[in-house]
Length: 159
Figure 1 (cartoon, rainbow, N blue to C red):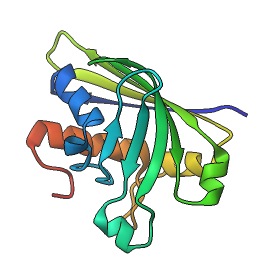
Figure 2 (figure 1 turned 120 degrees about the vertical axis):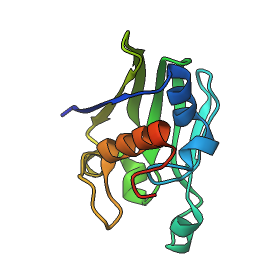
Figure 3 (figure 1 turned 45 degrees about the vertical axis):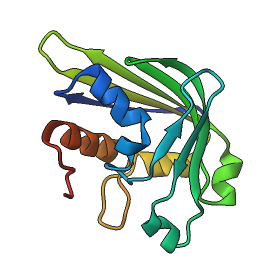
Figure 4 (figure 1 turned 90 degrees about the vertical axis):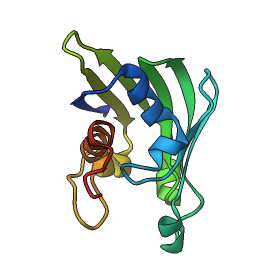
C-alpha cells in the first residue's frame, strides 16, 4: 500500500527566503522541532537532522533523521529521501520520499507544498499526519505553520 501525504501552505515571503528556511541549519533550528538540518544540496548529497539539546537530554541520539538529496533546483524544488532514526523500528521502515515545491504567485506570496511519499512506513505516517499536541507532536501541517509564522512575523507560534 502506497501512502502519500500532501501539505500546502501560503507564505508571504520570497522563494529564496522559503528555500533558505528549509535548507539551512540556521533557519531549521528556529521552527518546528528546532533540530538543525544539514543538506549537501546536490544529487546524492546527504541530509541529516540533528537533535536539540533538549531532545538529547530526553535520551534521543545526536542524529534523528537522515536521507539523501535526489534533486535540488533552488529556490523552487527539493526532492529527498527521509528516514526517522528514533528507533530500530523506524530505521527498519526504511527511507520515504519528500518533495518540497515553492511556487511564486503574481500576488506576492508563495505556495509551499510538501509531498511525502510514505510507502508502507506506518510509524512515520502516524507521526507526520498527527495533529498538534502539547506533548510534542504536530506533523507536517504544524511544522509548515510554524515556518510560515517565523517567515512572516519573525516569531514562531510558540514564541
